[in-house]
Length: 382
Image (cartoon, helix red, strand yellow):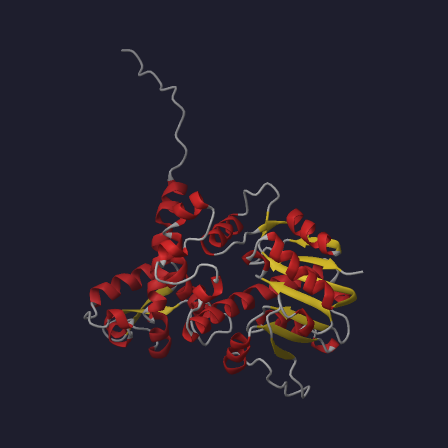
């Protein structure tokens, strides 16, 4: 009896990475839907809940309020959240009945009361980014944003930020999202600067920081708190409506009880056009600003930063830094496409940032990978 001949065909690559990519949008939509329906808020308010408890507590969006809430549908969403590590299954009562509680992950990032709250950006991703990404093919082929495809009645596509937040609630939601991301990113940026041994060079005693386009001031507030003993203060320069919202909702201009002054102040201005309004300082912060724009506009922004810095001052660019071969890391490359569908900007390599900075006159450029959400590029004005 002859042996069965062995196949010489190569073994196929494991299919799991493809399946993970295929299912990726489903995970995002579970998160989006749970946040939009207020599922995590309901459990936080009530404590461990059964699906019927949550069905009675959630508030559907206005457009869906004519739909009776299905306990089965809510149950399946909660089970999916549990599988993703956002809820944990517990048993309460006598006889024990299954209930769901928040995990530490949900408590840290999915509750409005959390200082690291990301729900604003999650809702923004669901309502604005997801529709734009649906037209990624159009952006890839045209090399331009997908606003006209995703939102044909939105108006002029030249005013990107007018499209991002056309109303005051939209603007506040976007600011809340950026605030949460800044809070998440600030710690790793500060730690990386300290490990590089340049923290005391950048943040000297009585250093004045100007945060261009900093909205709520979350990033520079973290910097001021870390170097509180050095009496570091900051000014956030942003559009009047943004500064007004930051004062009302995020404590901008609030007086520090110990020091008797506002450590982080707001300045109403267009920092690209109103350079003369930007105060002198030792540090300029540009956090998630340059990736919104093409090179020519970035040069104008950096010229403004250079102009307001004292000699020996530094600029900190907080962005995702792309590898020099422009094929990684994954998060940065996905963010690069996110810029494609929204703006005229892009994510850049360390070399590209160095080129832009040196065109303006900055020297001693250092690109530091943080291992966190944002990296940091540091340069000096001599």
